[in-house]
Image 1 (cartoon, rainbow, N blue to C red):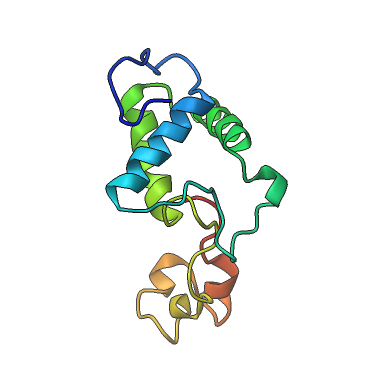
Image 2: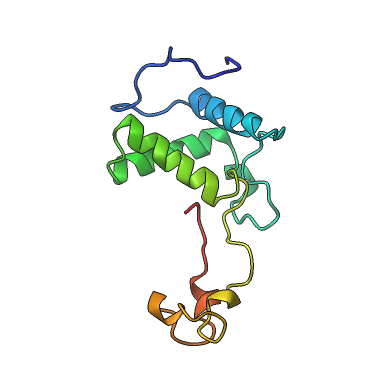
Length: 131
């Protein structure tokens, strides 16, 4: 696997990403932020079973998601990857920080506008998953 991204890869618009490509993308992104670990979803709050915290499983699920939601151009794929990379704290966690109380109506004037109409809605609907 090469150390840096080069334009030698075949266009990914109409094909699945490979495990090696996903590993390289993560490696380059983390290296740009001086992060050494390449482990996926290793935060203690992550609810993914250890057996599924592999690049093989992540790549498989990523490609399924691309197909299901018609994320079928290079720009859409890289945008999706960038979004989940950010939202999951660099592919480290799958649960939003905090307990969700900050989204309850008594703690946030915008809560009701977003559908959180009673105490406990923040915790009930806080972020889980990659996005």
